[in-house]
Image 1 (cartoon, protein in one colour):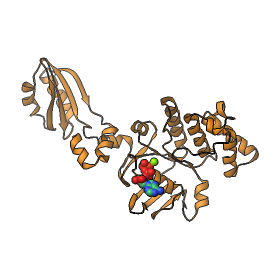
Image 2 (cartoon, protein in one colour; image 1 turned 90 degrees about the horizontal axis):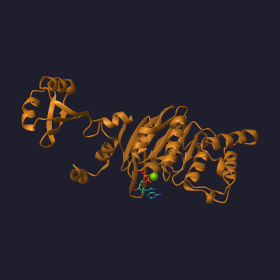
Image 3 (cartoon, rainbow, N blue to C red; image 1 turned 45 degrees about the horizontal axis):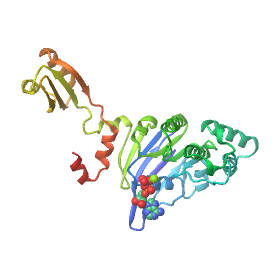
Length: 316
Ligand SMILES: Nc1ncnc2c1ncn2[C@@H]1O[C@H](COP(=O)(O)OP(=O)(O)O)[C@@H](O)[C@H]1O
Ligand SMILES: [Mg+2]
């Protein structure tokens, strides 16, 4: 539904988006992750046809966004950054105006407005003017505008920015549900959002794609993912170490802490280490307080990938 090929944008000497390619299929919710200034909004503006690319191509539902702008734009909904709106209109007036822009009139328009008012929970403010809305309602009004024509493709630029935790949860749920029937790209710098709503995520940094995968695949790239942390009672590190050296799938071991009665250490595997550790534990009758295979955290992946080399060294 969305195909992006070698997309590039420069503003004078500044290369904001640098040769990115990816595609999004129906039923996919793609999270667009990256630090501030990474090039997320610029990419989304080009996908929606609001900004022309310096090089590369974008197609939406098979239509080139530059050459067949009208066809591609009629099939997509766009929530821009900061949710700009006509502030002197009422919510109802604004949605009615947007519906007409999308070619909806009469009973079709009335049904479309009803549907988005329900979906975005706008009943309480329907006849309030846009400039008196709280940030949450303002945002949801803009989201309602983006989906009023029930588009096949949705581009949402930081759709949960500035919302409180309950509103964030509602918007994520809405995105996930709509994602079954549509192709959605949404940008965020909140990592938990990716796990909550995305089927796939792309991490973009300084204009380039630096990672592309499911949240689970990305988590495996966390520096500590797959390591085993063990805490034992009644045995010291000195006595544990010789036994560890017999493990064939152990890459390296590292002491985390040792007190009078407890020893905690981390094991880095180079194969299927867990069964070996459990067999050893049984044989030596270790008293295990805690044993955990680290899942990996998206935060760590994000930081490891997007921090400049110099800062990375100081974090490690
Ligand atoms: N119209 C513009 N003119 C000049 N530079 C721009 C313009 N729009 C964005 N940029 C620059 O391009 C880079 C990417 O910006 P943006 O796409 O807004 O990042 P993000 O949405 O990931 O925070 C930033 O360095 C930004 O300052
Ligand atoms: Mg942005």
